[in-house]
Length: 242
Ligand SMILES: *[C@@H]1O[C@H](CO)[C@@H](O)[C@H](O)[C@H]1NC(C)=O
Ligand SMILES: *[C@@H]1O[C@H](CO)[C@@H](O)[C@H](O)[C@H]1NC(C)=O
Image (cartoon, rainbow, N blue to C red; front, side, top):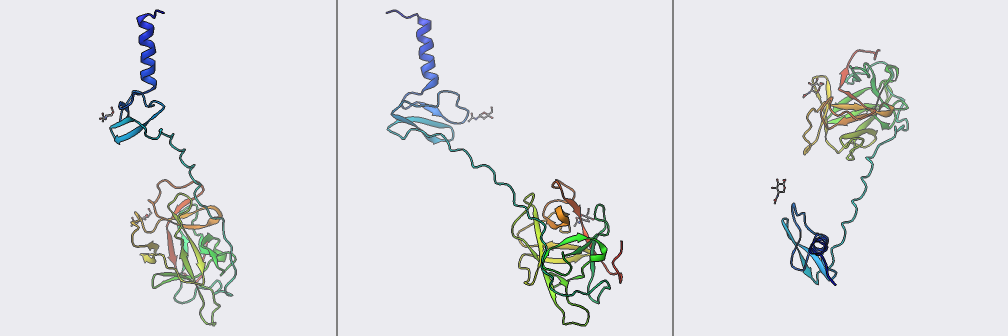
């Protein structure tokens, strides 16, 4: 039998490009040659720049598919259980209304739903405004009626990051917050925690269901869909107003 030289080279070339010989290179950075080895050899990585076909090595297995990315956790608006009759619509000494002062939450006030209950911190109508204060780094809501023994709920900050991986929920609870500290900066409500360097400690989001989240990212930058950037401020007029 006779082969033309061209056909022979073509056959040889296709063998070379398909499969690397034992002890020859089969991979490495920018390697454009064959990456498969003979049936009794495996492609063994020597370093980032060089992999070699080694007889007897385990045949190279295809890399497993990366896990599909899990959807970010989101929270549904949470309503709670009333924890007291509440202080009503006249501001009690030592407490504040807390409200947004910019669209779309201009003069929307911090509250829980139903009034004076456990559950998510919300920004809502002035007629349902709660009364708050920062005490020893805790954001507290007054839920007892005037003249009763003082009862407080505490704004508890989630460890979990929601929505865009940069949002922490705040839920009013009978137990104290152990994640970070609230403070006033001027009349703005801030939250800080050791180990998290917030670009703006007064940055908040108001998202679906008017839920408030601490925004760990920049104010007015990469705002997640369905959320609005807010700063929130104390207000101490005797009545909340529109
Ligand atoms: C691989 O290719 C890139 C892009 O051409 C080049 O910058 C790099 O130096 C190359 N690496 C090696 C190890 O040749
Ligand atoms: C945070 O952002 C608000 C809104 O732009 C701004 O008024 C405030 O000065 C900023 N605070 C800091 C510490 O940058």
